[in-house]
Amino acid sequence: MKVVALAGGVGGAKLVDGLAQCVQPENLTVIVNTGDDFHHFGLHISPDLDTICYTLAGLANPETGWGRAGDTWVVMGEIERLGGPTWFRLGDRDLATHLERTRRLQQGERLSEVVTAFCQAWGVKVKVLPMSDDPVSTVVLTKEGIELGFQDYFVARQCQPEVRGFRFVGSETAQPTPGVLEALRRADLVVICPSNPWVSIGPILALPGVRETLMHKVVVAVSPLVGGQALKGPAAKMFRELGWQPSPLAIAHFYQPLLRGILVDVSDAVWADEIRRLSIIPEVTDIVMRNIQDRIRLARKVIAFGQKVVETSAL
Ligand code: FO1
Image (cartoon, rainbow, N blue to C red):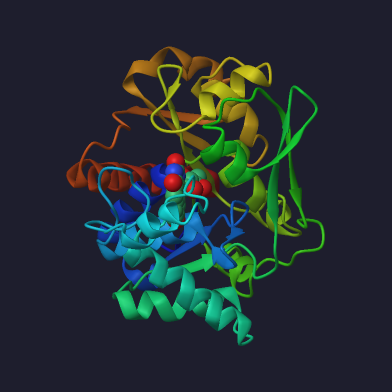
């Protein structure tokens, strides 16, 4: 079965890691959000791509989920001493990734080519595709009427400003990376990872042709919300501020009409009937990924559930 995963951030990386352990690499493609890419110290930073690639390579920092395991902070320390900005923490090993990516981009390589080269160097066999080689920037619209760049909102302001909406600047004209629409067309199953729907999956869905292609596919999602809370990040807060009760039902509504099935946590079993009323099949299971065994167990469950939904859809 050919599987395509849409992902961004730490929750997405964990499920992708599980999927990589139970799907043959040639049958798994990961399409990654680049809406939170930005420039810092003149470097091109791609947080979601790096989080996913580091995780797949076994290089990710297990405490934060982002950045490199065992990184050192010599450069940040020296920048601090010189009075430079330290709000966005770049470890020494992580900096090598940003330096080399920026150098290659300046030499005319496409972002997708850089990702392929890095994956090869890190021993990542799964196909990882940035959603676009063209720049797309997520902008957060706040209650005060101010527009914030994504990392300014997320890291510098710790997601504190109340949100009113989002814009994905560049998404109307950006083209999906070569191979993205083709991978989606060939997929037997598309998995929306437990990433933030508003700012991790939203930018991918905003690209020309993506929604239209997904309308013809079997798409299942794993809820990023458990018991009304996001396991990590501001997803639940965003749903509340935008007037939705944070729950797997809200996730199902968000992805309608693309979604055929959704995996929800056992603690959210109460939502199953209402989800079914949207003509979306709910699957109730333990979706919390505390360790690598959980990642693999959930990934197997996603594949088995997806297979069931594919068979049901073929009837
Ligand atoms: N997140 C933070 O909360 N603080 C940081 O200092 C930080 C640095 C950082 C450096 C490299 C990288 O790839 C990611 C980093 N992140 C940091 C995480 C990141 O910006 C967000 O988690 C994502 O953009 C949301 O998916």
